[in-house]
Length: 115
Length: 113
Image (cartoon, rainbow over all chains, first blue to last red; front, side, top):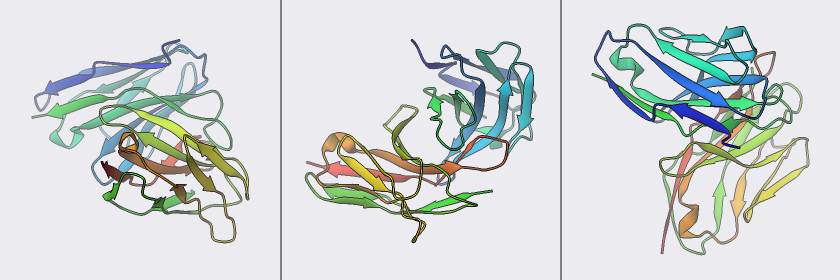
């Protein structure tokens, strides 16, 4: 099993450009998450999904959109990139809610720079 | 929602030294607690977890005990190795229906030979 994979690994954008980050998991997990990691901030939740066709906002959703058309894929979109979105983005998945006992499995991350 | 606070680094130790990274939590009830580790250039991976009060999680020589009296989940290792150099995150479920984890800000550990 590949686990959680993310595409691309690195990307440089200019302000105002758009892009989509792809996350795929082959563990048949129901829950998927997008986090961003910034120095000194830990990880913060952007959006999450509790199942195919459903998405919800997390702690820092502004400037991002997501879609979960297939259970195994969770897409994160930036419609008009801004320098404040320079970050490392991690996708994660879990079998049930991440609460209580379930482990979250993380992808390797996407390093995004917005100039 | 729940929250976690962990000691900020960086922490630099010599090989075979004892390691403690402090983590405290605030929560409704007694949620599971986790330690994740991030090696350079990689994503996070679960190091250990405890699912109820007084549980001890352990893995790769690391241990952490869920102490409800002090609302703590400190990470310890008796003898660190250079290969333990990484960033360590304490985490707890946020609570409610979101299902996501709330992470501490991370503690960077560097182990010198």
